[in-house]
Length: 410
Image (cartoon, rainbow, N blue to C red; front, side, top):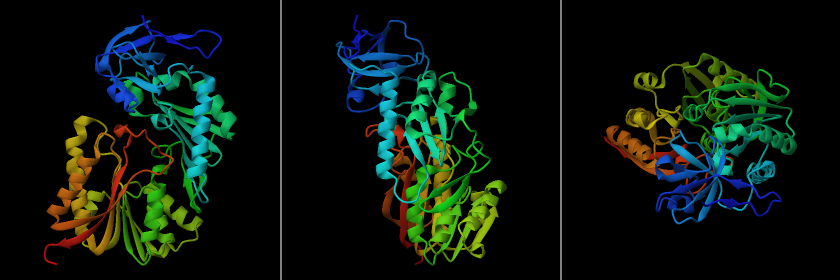
């Protein structure tokens, strides 16, 4: 029976073994961090759900150490391809410290909020850690990460020295692994009602306990900075504005007028707080509490710069078809409102929707709007949201920067 010999430690710890079907180690060896249940030939050693196992090829070659879950579609989540090491407190500390050092390199400017750990992207599958000023917000998305929460919290305290750590373990991935929602203070002080952060020198107030995601869309930081650079003198439409990240950047960038469309009145009120906190001219900003689809259909205005940053339209594969129809329609409407020479920045944050499918939906919307598009740039998340290169499923945020080359009748 194959086992993983932990030769670097004094006690010869051995992990349970999982053997893959013939040829099914190929994706793993090419860098993919997931192995699905259908790829497993046999399991030996009776591992518990969330336990670390040693993964073997069909020929008996050790290929990875991974979190194991016998009842999940993603049965194995790779921790390391070095099978001689031990997955322990020191391993977790090393991964968290390495991730934090990376953030020091890629986070520039006056910024106090960013993602510290991005799950598989930082080699700690199932762990999300966001930093908001002196507070950390963590999410344990898998049973493997959940079982090591004590070691993880200890490492976060040692490496990041937060004032407090707050848990928001609410993702759909938890349900797939038999976990319930958990939320509350984990360590230290509980965050206040609103945590003040700075992003590229701009002030924002974040509800880390009740806001969307962990309170703020940290992944859009670089795209907001781009939006700022495009905004001078522009008439701007920010759809699905939430608490106004793109709107504030546009006002700071010198936009002539900014219209924020959002269904949440509470989120819209927070935009006014952000305008005041940053000393911006609220007279150049207008809020519309409305469904974006309805607003675009009814609005006959035209804009120099439009942002479409909708919430996820598809959380499962079953919802992808409906989501693509939604992307096609909303981009069609936005393109109709874009002035000649204007720029559209459009996103999908639906992990279930592949890049090519999203791009095709946008193109179909443009055709229906009678327009030929220019692709100016592909867009994605900020550098504090890394993914493993082969992990396409991890690249949930995809975006396009577009302009109109020509349209019917012009």
